[in-house]
Length: 427
Image 1 (cartoon, helix red, strand yellow):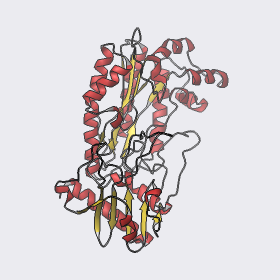
Image 2: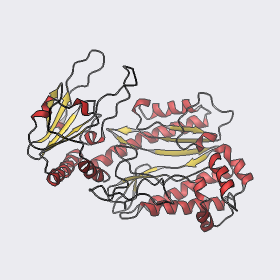
Image 3: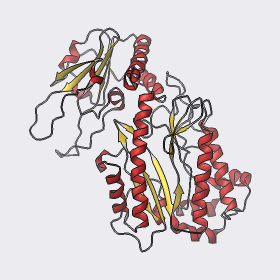
Image 4: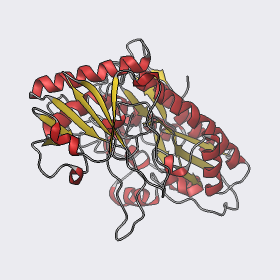
């Protein structure tokens, strides 16, 4: 049995359990519809809904439908509209299609012909037939399916592995562009060409920050003109393969002093954090370990004179490391179900001392997560620290010297396995 066939079997088992639990005769999943900018005929970039994309080994076009029925198996409703304005997608072919009934459909009238209790998952309810008895987006079903998406099949992991491989080629090209003095825009172009993708196909808008811009966590600009001297490149960029995203961050520097030491130390303890990604480990424990490593680094480099425990008690460390240690990864870059504790949808929110933590459930075998510690010199947070934290112990003169470097983040994509973590980014 191929990885994809095994993947289909796993999905059908999950959907079978959901049908049994909620007394459903079928579940229909919509890839979505094109949407448009306000008062315009220009459409937004299309991203297929994850519930639909999960079933199929190619990028789904708009108006694709997947239907699972315990009695009738799998059906793929293919958008069969004729259009001379655009390239019309071809009907899918290949050996992977064997389990599927593939039906060309120009509209959704066929939904009215489905018998029994049918649940529909769609972000475009306006495309449904006018008269129907469908259960549209039942919350309990969404919770049920979201919870299981955290655990990946081997086929899903293979797509994430391919996404990492391509992204790493792009990251190498980006680093070379940085060393050659390119602008942020040209570094991004080098990344896209080397990773064999268009900007519109990226799983998220790449972050390409030089110097101080590396301190902006979700930096969106890409300057056309390079700075007089490039000290730092922080690039956070991925690739999408059949809907599955890689999410990798690397930091490069030309510095030979304290900032280079920071980069090397963050890289070293990032690897140690990866080793903590064991089955059953609470993700919060990894985040808390990252805070301790960060505090130790601030002390070792002379940035803060306080002990690790003193830094944590005064929340000095969070001034330099203000985000969570990572997130689930899959069909969505920040994949779903991170705070969900069971299929019923019970939520465990992040604790007050880690409000941005995106994952509060213990790590399960087959989960794919990111581990992305960082240290930044963010003027707004540094100003707030001086105003609100008495005796913070920080060397403000040294911080002023380091602020032009922006910050450092190192991010890998990790599969949690019983034999130990598998690092897809550093195989």
